[in-house]
Image 1 (cartoon, rainbow, N blue to C red):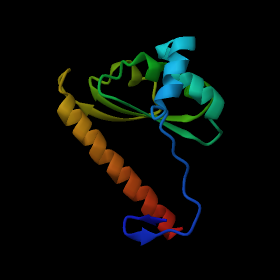
Image 2: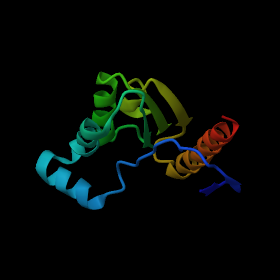
Image 3: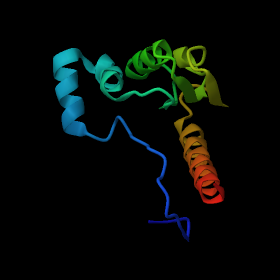
Length: 131
């Protein structure tokens, strides 16, 4: 498997986006409510040692708040990638990457979150290569 121009012949770290399966999300929203679409998935998937990263410009998305609360209750490390004033997620997450802007300034928040995502991915890949 090639990554960042280098071949890694080892087991890679597990990553999963809870927002990728539209059919599953729609079914969960119909059965349990939109606020529970991520928390319900975590009930099925979360394992000891996992890290949950919640990405939100406002920090007030109820579905992310419910997911972080669930993960915190399970003893999982939670990281918020937040914007604006951090919203309700700011005090709930164990760690925060907070892009403080005026409320409604989505562009800078989303651009910096994307950039940080690339930095984190690059760091993890380099760490795997060194190990």
